[in-house]
Image (cartoon, rainbow, N blue to C red; front, side):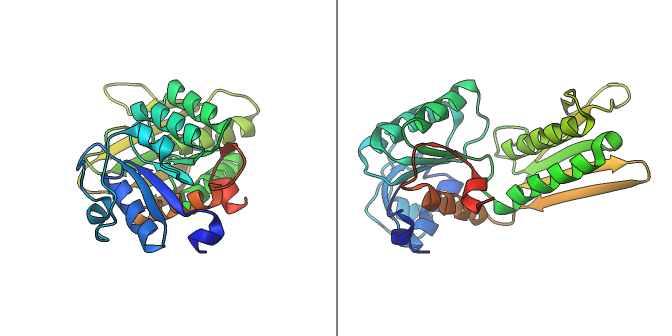
Length: 273
């Protein structure tokens, strides 16, 4: 689908000098989308097209978030940091741009900022822009609803050593999906998250959902959901092999969101699920 047909012609990228931002710029430029604003924390003044490996496009990296409000973007894609998100959301809303956000580690203030922006523009937040991860979450829900309290749930994620938050936003989304499915299956709330174990924590309790994080090397992102029962176990796994996977998902979401009414959206809407 062309950018013109999708209603996405002018794009702003926050976190443009980072690995995800550069991947988004590269795919956007290659598909004919114009980058009208590039906000980043490093490489200030450098042409964002050169950073992305597609050659100069006449757009330098800036650290001024307020430029988003006057950039005339159809959509803002944000892969930055939680403390920057409230300003990004406010500027996108002021400029009338849709907002696609993949920033993780959000707290109440950041979630409230997304809700406030969604009263004025369409907003889509997902901790993982991969369609495969979206499918994984649905498989986890179905499996846990079927197995109920007959299995122990453990979620293990692995990322590169430069990732600053743990567990990953995707791991927490999977844990929340598993908790909701188990509570539904057993007919009452009570599942609880356990983040790592050390010392002598005692025997594992049935309601626990373990969430563990591995950090090292250049792992882009692996997520494993273990459903362990007596005599058997079920393992559901997603491995990301390229950051372009997430960049492509973010652009797909931006194409969908551009021109939509204000409100909160998710990948389920993009995929028509």
